Amino acid sequence: MAVSRSDKLPVASDGDIVAVRQRVRSLAVELGFSLVNQTKIVTAASELARNTVVHGGGGTVEIEVLVDGARRGIRLTFRDHGPGIPDLAAALRDGFTTGGGLGLGLGGARRLCNDFDLQSTPGDGTVVRIVRWR
Amino acid sequence: MADVDRIPIIKMGEFLLVSIQVDMHDRLAMTLQDDLTTSIVKHQARGVLIDISSLEIVDSFIGRMLGNIAAMSRVLDAETVVVGMRPAVAITLVELGMSLSGVRTALTVERAMDMLRAAVGPAAHMGRVDGSQPE
Amino acid sequence: MVRNAGSRVVQILDKQERELLAAWVDSQLKSPGLRRDLIQEAELREQSREFLRRLRDAAASAGVDDVDSKAWDPVREQLRALSTERARRGFTPSETAMFVFSLKEPLFARLRQEIGSDTTVLAEETWAANILLDRLGLLTTEIYQQGREELIARQGEEMLELSTPVVALWDGILALPLIGTLDSARTQVVMENLLQRIVETGASIAIIDITGVPTVDTLVAQHLLKTVAAARLMGADCLISGIRPQIAQTIVHLGVELQSVTTKATLAAAFAVALQRTGQTIGRVRPPA
Image 1 (cartoon, each protein chain N blue to C red):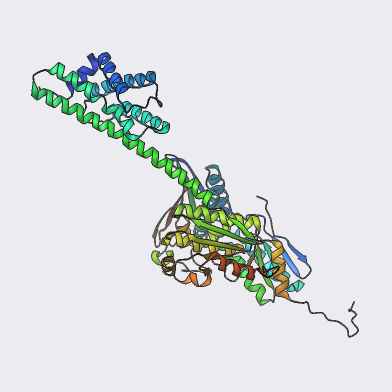
Image 2 (cartoon, rainbow over the protein chains, first blue to last red; image 1 turned 120 degrees about the vertical axis):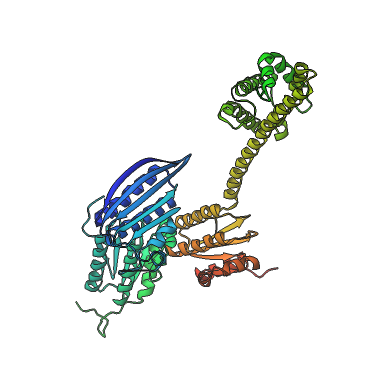
């Protein structure tokens, strides 16, 4: 499996969340993702980007294209240096929230992706990595 | 992407129509929520129709916005119907775990209008005994 | 010096190529199993010549022990192409494998001639040649099977698409009669298709009929329920009909969501409910005779 393309975007503001959505969407379209899978990866990206802005104090997202034979995938890695998530298991459960609203959206985002990886150290930040294949 | 300050709200009789055609950033969504609430009160609207047929993405934030609008309008004695959700969006919302249980939905504008009219019931008029209307 | 088993084989492939080729092709042409209708003599001769050449090159450079090694790539490549082509033409796997196995007799005959009375060496060389050709013959069978599996999978998909059309039963009422065994991936596609048809027709009710589905595993049941939820989000309603007791058990294990889904034992019953919900009715014009 190889990474054929790589790009980094800031994720610090409202506008950045939209920019991430649009970049991921145009990439998914270009790679020939099915409509449903396009929608899933863009929605997951939106959830995680918002987390990075709202809970992580801002950060970055690395956008990579994965190539495995004829398979094509998109890998997104969201990084922030915010307060981190103290209770990962709770965060991944639906309905968990530290602020207003329905929760961090992590559990939902996980269901939308093929691969999901979350590393968080309280006080040091969070790294969330997702992969969606075409 | 057009840089839109607000989503326009159109008054049609006792109903308000909103058509969301842009990829909204979060602040724009909050503004829409506020604007709608203000409009419902200002025009004494009895129903709100939100057309999302142009939306390719509805994430948890927008989902919550729709839920909030439905709840707030109900408090203000108005009914909300969301129209035109795309299949891919519906599938994704289900996967996200959002049921939008307080939000009524319709496939078409016609069906939505039927639902709103049914919910609103016959309009109450302030009229005179002889049947004439006040100016 | 330790002599490599197979070195005499290489010698024969090298020095007696023409005679070996002639004997081998002859033996293939004489074989009752040869599909003269599916392959011409000239083509057979060319394939055989090419095979011997590649066989010699690989055996000379890397010995006959490891046919999976890089040196043997060209041989495997030719066999792959040959097997795939023959499968396409309609050869059976045995017929294709015979291409390789039929080389044994002429090769063993030449080994006997060359090695003569040294029975130990003859036995070793014959054994090495035998193992080699067995491995290569089996390779053709594996390739054949892979090709068939891919073809069957593709045909299965096409058939499933044909066997799951969405039917407009009545004004605003769609039916999706599912037939055959469902797997997770196909169920997803079929369900997405249903939602798309709901939008296109503006139907208010869709009936998913699973009378023709023998078993439903939990993944498929989850997809069904997610489809019902998605249709609801869009503003349409879904009924599920044709549920047999065993399937009912599977679905019940999934818990809460079932309560809000209307399920009926038969498509007819579901249709009646759908008519009622859409405010329609079917009446008789005159009493039956």
